[in-house]
Image (cartoon, rainbow, N blue to C red):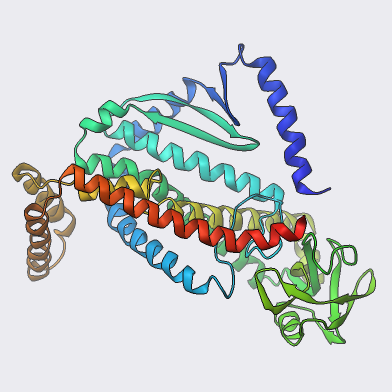
Length: 429
């Protein structure tokens, strides 16, 4: 069944239940968004924030310069994407289980949906935790469904945020994206651990390339199907990714490929890629078909390797989606977190009392460095503070700057989405 039907069926079931139970469970319906508000999650956020407030502030103090670097990196990457736009799409919508022709990525349905839920919950939870650490109350918190995509929401008191100092605001604004980045790093370590164990123990061997997805409206649709294991392409053996890539790279548009699989031999005529008419296109996504080696089967059985393999895929998705969505949110455009961060940085005012606090914080984190290095860092730091204090920007000018930057970035993203998605969507019609 096409994954879009799962979304349609799930949407109908969930929304019917939400309508029937909205009065009993405090469910609100706003457009295509369902929200379940609860005080229990407020208590959870309070407990997490109060358990180790110094750690959260320490984490965010480190995250702020890292986050600023990521903001710059994201802007550079976005500009670079314009140059690559006519060669290959670099931006795509993330919808687990839905394969759009020509899209650079495909997210499996089950693991993708779970991973996407962690993105939203961790992101909003980060904002809530740092709000409480900074002494700002949370007006509401709960679970939500955006159509059928699960997530969470946290609404700190805006009046209290407006009265907070600049560093507190930056910690709160950076919290969501940097909590995503932190979870991505943890997930990457888990993937590395599982992968390292599977590799060192020689748990798996490969016997071909498994088709994980046949792209709709592609040359392979109706000929090949999910789950088939490709062993040869035009009589070239394809037992792993390297040999498969070599075989496919030797093809051209219009070639009649003979593809041998565990279900038989099929012929597919290559077409042109929806996003680059000069490149051949089969329309399948593949991964190495792994089977448990005889030695590992005798030592570990088949259940443990299967569980580890599924966990590896799940944490790979958690890593990818948290890193992708977290860094995307750092783009300096409103209403993304990056836009709020840029606005706060532009409007920052260096008062004498705050300068002393900044220097005290710097001295605290550099106290173990050699004295000459500490002095060099302090001089450069105060040079930056002097520049900011002598070039303060009025709120009116900063508002114009933020709107202009946001508009430019939005135009670029729309261009990339149109080029990356429209040709594929047209093929589906």
